[in-house]
Image (cartoon, rainbow, N blue to C red; front, side):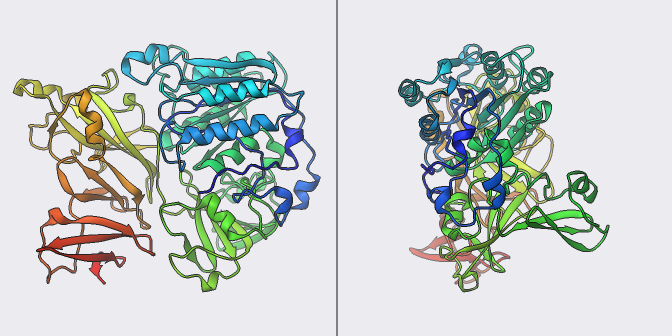
Length: 598
């Protein structure tokens, strides 16, 4: 992905006249704000082809007091934006501050900067909201210096921050809060009355305060929580995976009238893939939609396609996406905005395929000139001719902030020295939807009777509702009851028990983590575990775990499985598997069924 756009959309100046309250919430990675409408390449909107008449004639929104809540929690230190999440956030927010007119009134706050994320710091961390600038006319230089000085470190007190943001706003009349976070509220079980959804319901009770939530590399539980905030206040919710997306979607949250005319992962002019014919008609679609078969209808300059009464795709050759991409732009701009940086882009039937929202399962099919001559593995080249939003997400995965310990049985009230999350990745299961695979190191209380301090690495699966299972789909047992010396242990142990203490956790991180990319083009997850030399793969298609990679074509080549290693990703988007025996290494490629020699 490329650096965030630095240019201004023509409609920004009208939008940013709204009073802003910037509450910085930036966790393991970075947060970023940029003018709404810039393309992924960094070109200005006026330089891009395909500007729709709808955008040219759209009236500017009435300015209303706005609070932007930005996450500066410890998870924002992750290096996956690509680059550090928080660095991307700082860059984008300072650009947004630069774009504000002189008369702009704003307040700037940040949470997660005053404590670390240790168990001992939780009480203070759950009240850690820092005011960088009180509500009023913006001193841009001072605010930008304050943003630059921020260091992501602590907890994610979303509910408490929403209350602080609302307190900065006028007590009545139209007003809004724009929230950016990379994870769920990690304090909602720590203080009475601070459940995020309940707080949102209270804040939105008068019907005039709306919350627009933007998740940055959000997992299923986070997306569900942010959707609740939006639903309770009549706001909106969306997810961003990289700096350019984050910048555009934060800016879009400040200009909802314009955003609603854009093609986004949430849909187009009120229509969303997967919507029933009845719901689409209620949203304003006119025309007959049969209960069976295929139907195409015109809608706001786009073509919508229904199959068996369900909306399957929305295609436009004129409108922009919420990230500023339009027909007529070079396909390289789609690459810089939507491409998985670790896998080659799929080009099928004249279109490049990208994930729009892995949580909801939507994807983009972007048709471009020259697609028929595209070479697999090469960078797409040509001009965009149309953009389609469909319920067709790719199998791409992405790293996320680990779910809070309270979600895991037996870890609810234990310290980080007992339960320690190590790594987490968001995947999409074909039947079960979004799943968060979480690696955890567990100090086993029962091992004390053996006179040692054994711990075990576990792989847990968390669905969008927060339900925790082992990789085979069985309910998770309490980690407090787990005995690494007992046959079967607890849940799905990954590798043998090993001995560690709190000071040694970081030493094990590199031996217990997901590979990059976390999944291949078929959605198989690859990771390594302590004490296991060969790679481990987890196949979402069968909801299970295997500890030996399937290499069918090896009858003529006997090797020790401990010598298996993952190589680079090939042009089809699959890992090359290297097997070594007697000083000879052979490369195996995935053929759709298993690994075979070239």
